[in-house]
Amino acid sequence: MPKSPNRFFLRSALLVLFLATLNNENILAQNPIITNQYTADPSARVFGDRVYLYPSHDIPHAPGKGRANWFVMEDYHVFSSANLTDWKDHGVIVTQNKVPWVKPESYNMWAPDCIERNGKYYFYFPATPKDTTATKGFTVGVAVADKPEGPFLPQEKSIAGVKGIDPNVFIDKDGQAYLYWSQGNIFGAKLKENMLELASDPVILQELPTKGLKEGPYMLSITAFII
Image (tube, helix red, strand yellow):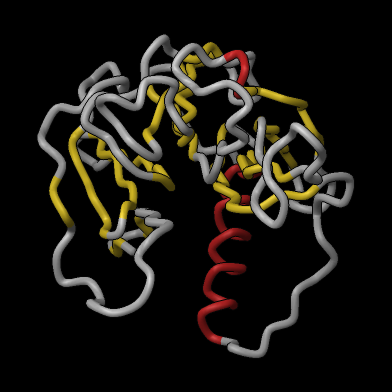
């Protein structure tokens, strides 16, 4: 099947923007593409002829809602664009009090990611679990949909064996899927075919900088290069 020219344009445009940031330390930011809410940690994915943006969503602190001078994140929106200029907000796709394993009113839904496999869309997100006997701090869960904009159905439990934040998913050319995340170090593990469970024990990625903060892993391939 021939590739869509629009899809080729979107991939090319994203690559140009990425390379421009690498080659110009003084590049200036343009106007925010999302202006009606506070967003951070975006994961950009090309599905079909559109770019889908999956960011975290910060809301103002209020009595009984989160804590002052900290992140207050209760849900996720997804945005999409066909031209990288005009963006559509598809609304809330996952919210903390409708995820069975998430601690209610924890407001800790941080950086997410999404990927497509076999016609399904898998949305990975970190949060604070209700049950802290096995996992203290953050863990990572999955919500599944038939379309990139949802509706997404959260799984009953988080992914066993994953402790940390900033999940990122990568499918290699041989079809093997990997999950990456951070918790002091950068971790990685194979995923099962169902994309809901680990297929290997987590390992710490080696040969990374030994000083400074380590978080926000993002694995992607460009032609013959892996970044």
